Structures are given as structure tokens and as C-alpha cells.
Amino acid sequence: MKRRRFLLSVLGLGFAAAGLQLKVSSVSAASPKFLFFVDVTKCIGCGRCVVACKIENDVPMEPIFFRTWVERYTWLRDGEIKVVSPNGGFNGFEDGSIEAIEVEKSYFVPKLCNQCDEPPCVQVCPVGATYKTEDGVVLVDEKYCLGCRYCIQACPYGARYIYPSSGPRKSRVGTADKCTWCYHRITKGLEPACVKVCPTGARQFVFVSGDQRLRRIKGLKGLKTLKPEMGTKPKVLYFGIDSEVR
Amino acid sequence: MSGFEGFIYPNEAEIYWSVLIAVYPYITGLVAGAFIVASLLRVFNVAKLKPVYRLSLLTALAFLLTAPLPLIAHLSHPERAFEIMFTPHSSSAMAGFGFIYAWYLLVVLLLEIYYDYRKDIVEWASKFKSVKGTIYRVLTLGDRDISDQAVKKDEKVVFWITVIGLPSAAFLHGYVGFIFGSVKANPWWSSPLTPIIFLFSAMVSGIALVLMIYVFGSKLRRQKPDVACVSTLASYLLYSYILDLSLEFVEFTHIFYAAEEGIELIAKLMMDKLFLTFVVIQIIVGALLPIILIVLTKLIKPKVQILLYTLASILTLIGVFAMRWNVVIGGQILSKTLRGFSNYSMPLFGPESLVLALAILALPFLILYVLVWVLPPWAAEKAETF
Image (cartoon, rainbow over all chains, first blue to last red; front, side, top):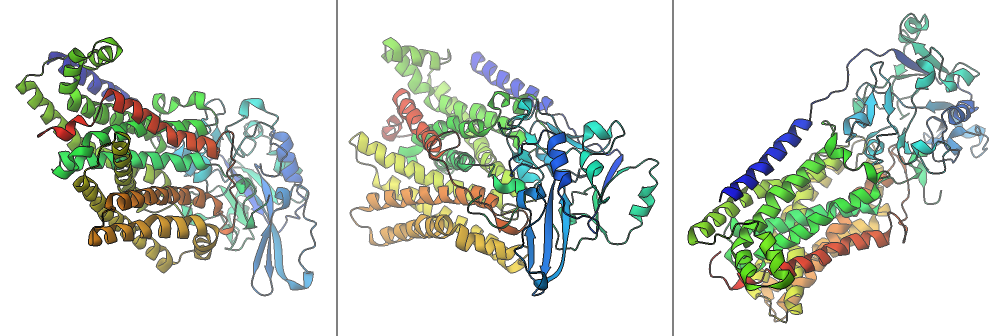
């Protein structure tokens, strides 16, 4: 009898110890240091941002892996909306599939990680490999990620992919990868690669403290975020998009 | 890039949760369902289920031991799998897996099986010599007291473990439903009803599995399966299926009546993209047909009723797997752009393939074979009381 009781208490203690490990952690609520502004009225769909991003961040060249990509939204006269993103806009947009006469309006929408203030990817990561930095950027620890892909399911924006074995950075293979707003650059005061190469200023990066553009951007009417109904509080602000863009 | 339709985000071209992730909730559902069968006898005193009591416990154990395999096999970094227990992230539903699993395995199933078999194990330990005897001597865990008093205490312990085990079983599988139901980004998954539907479909599949294994097990031993027992199992299968289908009906009524953004796509997903696996296999072949079979068999009571119940169970098992498939794969081919569909074609061989999924699904039967050899569940059939 004693032995049985002993076995039960050992089990109990084991679970209590395991329970203690579950320390409560929450996403830090520090105010963001950076904002990303996209003015779609200026984007010409050249795709240089997509190319620059792939080179700067060792993103595999295959057409199904992107940290950033460009979509083209076209409203036809009959009300139909056509969206395309051939090779993520890597080679620009040259298809002539739609007759100009049918088009009501059309514009390009650059996409990237929204660095959400309430990131669902961080919430679901079972080991905390995806985390939010104090300056508000969501990063992935490639040495820690299991490759369970739950974050990919949780991201409403399709911003994540699993780094394939064909990619140039071997230490990242099999882990979740996504745009970091070029964290290695912005923490040194440099702009992200996609912003740097944008020839029209459609992509603008804002260092929140002391940036003169902040007031002008915040004052713009019709500033939107993507899928606001998700409650993720994105930090990429779009100017000039319709509510159909998601 | 074949099979895509409309516009999907470029990163959605790959399906990230494969067939293995459909196998995982299928297996945990079978565990929970089989355990519920055992508790019907222990807690709710459904005496007619006595012949399958121990068998259902062993079945639950065999499947529970297999449950982590599809998960670990699909990780890109399986060598980091244990981080989920060593450094769990408390806001992640998935991080609960290790703890819920360990609780269920160690506190519920192993303990219940140990205390339920203890008297027999002690007797077998002195009866058998050689290797088998050694196994039993180890399994006694050093406690050889089988006085009436000790055995009575064992029964009390088993009763209380079952009482704790029932909500644990519900939690084990309800939690798997929550993993999907809590993904707000996915309109096909996101629903508070998902965990409950998962739970009831788990009961359905677990009962069907125990029925099937009992009938085939009896045939293998050249014994006649107990008609009253099989018939009672079939009744419970019927009740739980009716509840399960009612819940699914509520879910789909809500989806179509509320008709939120993307409703056209969801309709297309059900009636076109998943027509074969959803409408044909899950609903018609896997649910309506077995229900009709059971009802007709109950009404007519033909001589081949056990055969018909077994057939209904096999169809049910196929139907519930189709349900898991439709949730996991269906939810991913529906693009988050709500403007198109991705495509999933299951590889036959290699990692995350059909062959691996089938191997993982076959493994619990092998484990069960060994468990039944070590801990024959049939003795309880003859016992007057338990």
C-alpha cells in the first residue's frame, strides 16, 4: 500500500513541477518604434522590391516563397475584381490578358508582414520561437522553431512560408520565415531593402521618433490596414486602397 | 502550379498541414471515443458492455501511444519536438499537447489499466514462469496484495480514475478541436462549435472502432461475439451519431444563414472542391448510410445483425476520417484571400505521404495485438462482477 501511495505522489509531484514551467508570458505592449507606409497610388508594379528582398534576405528564388510580393487589383466595368500576382510580381506585370477598354480602375498593392501589434502567429507558436521584439517587430528564432507551421495557419495575410532545403541559408531550412522589415538594417538606422530600391516612394519606412513624415502620413484621409476585422492591429498603413483589398 | 483557382497568396501554393495532420485528430478521437465506451460501463453501469470494457481500454492505450507519431513526423525539426514540453509558450493551444497527453497517458489510462488488471497480474505473476512471468512480476510494481480488501480498494480507485478520465478524454479531443477552431484567420475552421463537433465525432468513431475490433477479435479467437453487447454498442453509435450530425447541422445552418464574407467560396468548397470527400464519403457513405443500416437492423433484427453493425462501423470509421480530412485539408485549400483555392495532392511515398499515413494508422493494431497478448481482456467477460 505504501508503495502504491508513493508512486501516486511521485506522479502528482511530477505534474506540479511541469505545471510550474508554464510561466505566464504575454506579448509586450511597448510602443512601436517603426511604421510602414504604402502609397498604392505611387506603385508602378516594377517588382524591384520583390527582387531586392529576395537578395537581401536569402529568400529562395522559387515563385512560392516570398517575404514581400506585389498584387495587381483590377476592377472591370462589369464590377468583377481580378487579382493577380505572377511570381509575386518579381518580374513585373506584363500580361495583356485584360483589354484596357474593360478596365474601370487598376492598381498595385505591395504586401509584406504587417508586424501586427496583436500578432496571431506569436500567440499560437508552441515554443515561443516567434516573438515580438520590444520595438514591435515580429521575428522568428531559426534555432528554435520546430517547423510545426501553426503560425502559417494563424497568419491571416499569408505572410509566412517554410524555408525550403533549396534555399541558400541552410540554418533556416525547415523553419517558418517571413518579412522582418529588414530588422538587421532598421536597427542600424537604415531603411528596409524594399524601401531603398522603390523608385517612386510607394513604400516608405517611418522611424517613429523624430520622423517629420509621421504627422503627414497620420493626417491622410483614407488610411487603411488590411483585414482590420481580425483584430491583429497591423502596422503597415495603406493609402489609396479599396475595402475589397485583403 | 496546377489545380489552383482564382487568386491565392503566393505563399499559399504549398499545403503546410498534410494528410498526417488529418491522421492526428483521427487517432486522438479514437482514443477519446474508446475511453468513453469503457466509462459507459464503469460510471454509467451499462452492464451489457462488459465484454468490451477492457478491450476498449487497451484500444485507447494502443492508439494513444501512436498519437504523437503523425505530429512528430510532420515537424521540419523533429529533434526539437520536446521543446514543446520543456519551454512551452503558455498562450499557444498547441503547447498544451505534451501536458494533456502526459496527463491522459500517465494519470488516466495507465493507472486505470494497472488497477483494473492488478489482481489478474498478481495471479499471472505466480502462474507463469519464463519471460511472460517476468513481465507480470514487473507489472505488479511490487504490490502483490490481492486480499478482498485490496481488490475492493482497486475498484474504488478505478471508478474515480474513470470519473476523472471522462472529462480528461473530452478535454484531450476537445482541445484538438480548439487548435483548429481558434484559428480566426481561417473561416472554415474558426468556430466555437469545432471542439464540440470534434468531441462527438470522436465518440462516434471510438464506439465504431471498439465494435469493429471486438467483432474481428472474436472471429480471430473463434468465439461468437456477444450479440447484446454489439447491439448496445450499435445503439450508442447511433445516439452519438445523431448528436454529432445535429451539431454539424447547426454549424452549417449558421454558416449559410449568417452568410458572411466568403460564403460563395465556402459553398464552392463543400459542393465542388470537397464534393467527393465531404458530400459523398463523409455525409452519404460515412454517416447517413451507417445510420440507416443500424436503424433498419434494429427494426428488422435479421440473423446477420452483427455483420450489418460491423459494416456500419467500418463505414463510420471511413466517414469520420473523411471529416478530419475535410477539416484539415479543406481549410487549407480555401485561400485566405477568399478569392480562390489552392490544391493538395497527396504523395504516395516519402515523408507526409499516403504510405506513411497508412503505416501510422496500422501501428496501433500491432500495439493492440501485443497488449492483448500481455493483458488478455477476455477474462473479464466471464467474471460475474468487476
